[in-house]
Image (cartoon, rainbow, N blue to C red):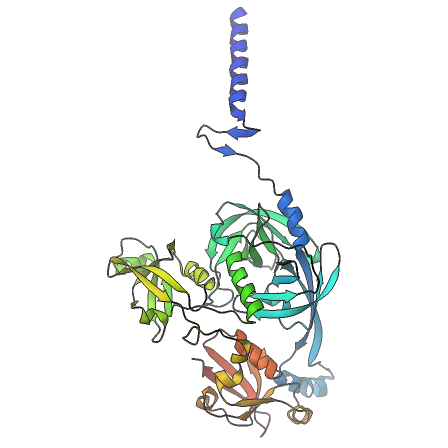
Length: 470
């Protein structure tokens, strides 16, 4: 019995000593590898974030195409007695993030695109009417503003420093449930989903497992310090609801877009002047590469910055400004943070040898000038001249809107075979009701080819022209 008592006493003592060694430094638990672990407290970040994340309600008019409007007033009405309206009101909702005390709010472009009225509701239930400062369809971001001062706002964090496994919060208004906070971790970076366009310049999402649903678009992704590190934009789902993954536009990209929209009304995009592709195992074997690091230069633009700096096809870009890149989305994210006129350092692999190239980035026009909204219009891009339709024209064509080509001039329209008097009603499946619609489309367009549909005044036959933009 005494031996048993001794064994029990020794066991208790050893257990007590183990507890003393295990718990130290204000409750932190020390592992055998001397690393400290503790719970992450997200309450302060959540309380701060919900004050700066707003609910956005938009009202806009959904328009049928001019061609649909013709049939709605004849075929459907005359044969079936159905009066199909050419336009009807639609209400939608999303989220936004206040980024300055004087009321600038960043959100997704698809939240406010074509909105005729934007109502912003703060967490304390105050309501404001917002105006659009600028939109950028390519980045799916928009900047809007409400009038006032001393609004709560979030500061931008550095999305380049975000780490996989880091705790984050998604703050927004899913299903019109205001001030909703969900938590998760960063599960991937530089994720390219190809949801905007195969050649989109900004598809480099932060992937998280924080729950995001309809209505969260434009809301905040924040870190444990309450800093804005992303704008929630998309979910990966087959049914339109959260199924485990959500995606946010990195804050460094959002900050650049917001700055440019505020200063110029247009994002100043910078280009190297190359087409790039990821390096696959097959490509690495074909080129006898030692590894799959970097991205491959597949094509050099004739008048681009890369050609002028001596970059060659089949060169491999290993890093930009000493930041390693191993995917096309990583390279695009870095360039999206840059402006025309800046010089970047490219670390490359040329014919098996490492080298360095310094390249001055250019804009789409091939120079470093500031691009303004006034410089992006139909006259400058397509050539010719244009006019809105009069009421008499609308009645004659039996359409609700369109743009008449009053002169073809010299340029892409003439090259495509468009004649004077052509009425543009649709471009790339987007309804064009007036010159403002036309110029707005060209401002945000990122397609190399556009399909223009419309009618001539010699009848109701619909014509389609395909134009390759330079």
